[in-house]
Length: 341
Image 1 (cartoon, helix red, strand yellow):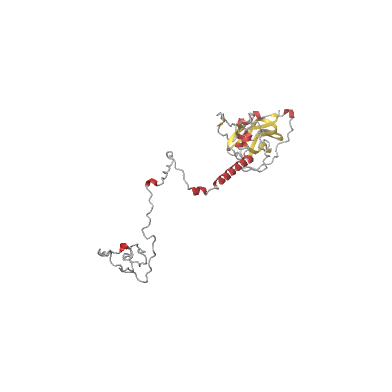
Image 2 (cartoon, one colour):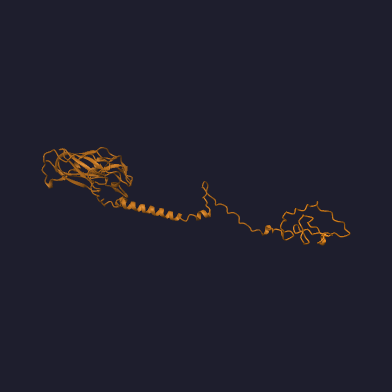
C-alpha cells in the first residue's frame, strides 16, 4: 500500500512517523490500525477529499503530547476552603448615624494626626496661661474680702476710656478762709442729702437678698453698699447738700462698687470713677484723680466755705473684662471740715 504524503484527516504534511504530527491520526501503510486487511473492504472515506495546502504555506508547529492534554483538576465541594461568614455591622441606637469607615491604607497614611492634636492642645494651654498671668487676677483678688486692690497709679490727666470733658481751673472766687483748728475738724458726711443723675434698678446677691443702689448708700459708712447708675456716668454731676455753711478741708470717695461677693469682685466688674472735679459755692473747682483701690481716697483742698458740693464725673472706666457690668458706681464719699459757728 502506498503511504500518503499528506494526512487524509487534517491535510497536514506527514513526516516519517506512524502518526500525523498535527492531529495524531495513524498513517496508512505505517501503522497496523490504519492498514486495511485484504479480506475487508476498503473503509469509505470519512470526509471529503482535503485539498493539500499550497507549497508556500508555513505548516503549523507540532503539538506535544500527541494525545489529548491532561484534564483540568476539579475540586469537589467537600474539599473547597470554607470562607468565614461576613461580620454583621454593630447595632446602633435609633437615629444614630453609622461611624464612617476608612480603608486601612487611608488610616495608615495619617501618622501626623496625633502630633497635630498635641500641638493644638499645647497652644490652648499656653494661651490660657498667658491670659491668667496678664489679666486674670480678678478671681484671686475676690477670694480675700479683706485684701485691698493695689493701685496701678492714678489716671494720667486728660486720659479717659470714654473721653474727658474740659476741666476748668481750680481758682476760687470767694474770700480767703482761715483754716479751722485741727481739733474742730470732723466728718460732716453723715448729715448730707444728695441729688444724683439716676439710680439703677435693684438686683439680688448670691443669697437672693435684694440689693438697692440709692444715693444714701454713699454716706452710710459701709463700703459694701453703693450708689449706682446704669451706663457710663462721664459728664454727670452729683450734688451734695451739707444743710448749712461749713468750712471744708478734705474730700474723698471710694470710686467704685467695693463689694466682693464670693468669687465675684464687683469693684472690678463695674465701671470705676477715675477723675472728678469737686465744685464749691464760691466757684472753686478741685480736680482729683483715683487709682484702682477699694479704699477711701482723700484729697486735701485747703479751707473752703460752702453749703453744697457738686461732684462732676470727668473720667469713668469701661466695664470690667471679667463679668463686666455696665454701671457707674460710688460706694462712699467723705467730707471733712468744721462748722462756721
